Every structure is written in structure tokens, then in C-alpha cells.
Length: 220
Image (cartoon, rainbow, N blue to C red; front, side, top):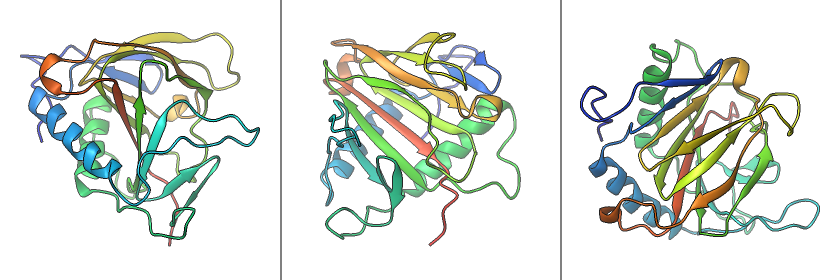
């Protein structure tokens, strides 16, 4: 699976904050279509897509399936709630994450870095949102890699101290890559809205898929 040749298709990387880099048009159209097919296969797995119930009783509007480790608010486990094993983490996503970090920062992950071993596949329909939150359930602080497929969204990238301002709104389109690590690794972020009907016509996707790839730092 190939990332776009930046000189022909993509736009230059944009540093949104120190350690937070947006690479528009990073995935070529055929790579996007391949990932959409894979996401559909993963969604048919033992757990399938689910809306998690938060500790205070609210239900997430985003549907999610986990790979490698099962995420539920706010922890990771090796098994699903019914005791079945979680679907394995695909090597393909590990390779994509390593290439994404190299392209975002100009250098591959350093030797000894925690391996990427977990992915959350999130599906947004026209009404789905994601509130401001930190990705803080991992022991590792390797950069988070985020891939967008389908409908465009407004991605709100904030600060590390509070859910409130200052923040920057970034429009993420299908094929875009967003990587955040270093001083921005614990920044609050969310998706206040999507733009229905903006997916590339040939992708065959009604809605938005977001694949976030992380290094859990967990063992066993």
C-alpha cells in the first residue's frame, strides 16, 4: 500500500502545533479503497462495531472496533467483554504507522521505540461526534497516527492542559494523515462535526472512517 507521491498529489506537511503534523492527501485513492475494504472485514469480527457506554452513562455516538487490544473507557484488555480474544493487530497497520511517523517527522521511529500494536477503527455517521479528550490510556508515549477515510471532518486540536481554548480546527479529508507526539502527545482533541456527502465518489463509503494507530506499551 503506497502513500501518495507528495510532489504529484499531496500537499506539504503542516505543523499544527509542536509535534503535531497534518499531511494532506497522504494516502492514494487505491490505498484508501483497500483500507475501507479491510475496515469492513474487521467490523465483521467477533466484537463488530459497538458504541461504548461511558462511566457516567452516556453512549458514544461513534461506532468502534478495536484491533490488537480491546479498548473500553478507559482501559485496554486482551479479551472482549464476553471473554473472546480481540482481533489481532494487522502488520499492515504497523508498517503504515512507521511510514507515517517517518513522513511526519523526517525520520523513522528510533531504535527501541515501543511497537505499534493497537488500532481503533471509528465510524462516524452524519450525526456522530467525538468530544475533547486525551489519548492517555497507553503506557507508551509514542506518537498517535490517525488516518481519515470518507467524509471530511472538522478535527479540533487543542492544548495539553484543558479541553477549552486555545485550539486549532483542521479540516481532515479522505486520505489525510495526522500524527501527534512529543510535546503534543497529550493534547486534547475531538471531532465537533463531519461534512456528510463529501467522501470521494469512487470510495463507496457513506460516512467517515478514522483509524488511529497507537503503541500501547503493554505486555502480555
